[in-house]
Image 1: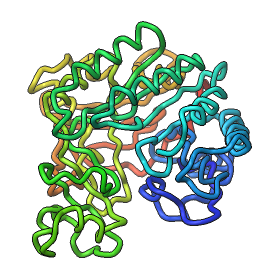
Image 2 (image 1 turned 180 degrees about the vertical axis):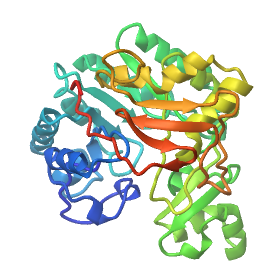
Image 3 (image 1 turned 90 degrees about the horizontal axis):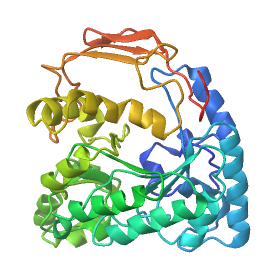
Image 4 (image 1 turned 180 degrees about the horizontal axis):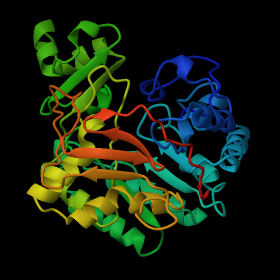
Length: 387
């Protein structure tokens, strides 16, 4: 997360995907919220507190579980952020910066949330062959604390896991009978993150989006780079690090099944600072409306709209948002349901979608006829606050 962050040393993956060190200048969540409000952003901004940010603030190294005193310090900082409007806690347990965190460490932090209306969101400890145990871990933590659990970008990643969406959704359904559980999903059969040696699989097309030691190869696949260098893909990946990558590792059938589930929200998971971003940064929502709703009829237009408006607002406790209703904030999009579609592709990803006629943010006309108006109506949204 952008805050609270106190950089005592270099900042860890995946925080470095969000910007340079100068972007992490808010030592408290209150400072960050005030800065967003003062900037008057073009869109509304609401924020979670990142587990990795807390770990990096209070631990000397991240390849181990936190001690009791370190957990206590993280709890105190989390409480302070919640007091200033944070939506809840977010973990990225698949990343090396948090993978060594014990279940007890996570549970101790989530135990701070009850009674505040906050949520626990998680990038699961595994999205591949151990996705079901990872889901059960997340649901167990939520049950123990009585806090809603949201699984970020739910998927069955890796060719060996294709076809397992039925079991994944059965796990989600089973948990929903006992507790508040939800998930989000992006409408692409490819993920994007750091280049992770654990995810290198020569059966999967992996495109390198950036590399610190070899910036000249951005845009090539790992297979192409390995062939140029005359070595195995795993060895080439080692030479490229640190780097970013797009992994074409998801089954389209699994993607459709997860998108269609009534508990699934739509999210982009986009990285604005990536030199060659995943097309989801520019095309996510029109892709759902155009391809999956209008063309494939995966769900109705009303269901598609709910997945990206009222359902997220209700799930994250954003009051008076997400509906066209008297007394609600006028966050509105005027689009042509017959023509809205994404244009961004993996080879040409920075392309605005078509079919979006106008956008109002808190009643301020911010976009019209293909261009921004220059009027900025965004606000910082605190948990549960009435705007």
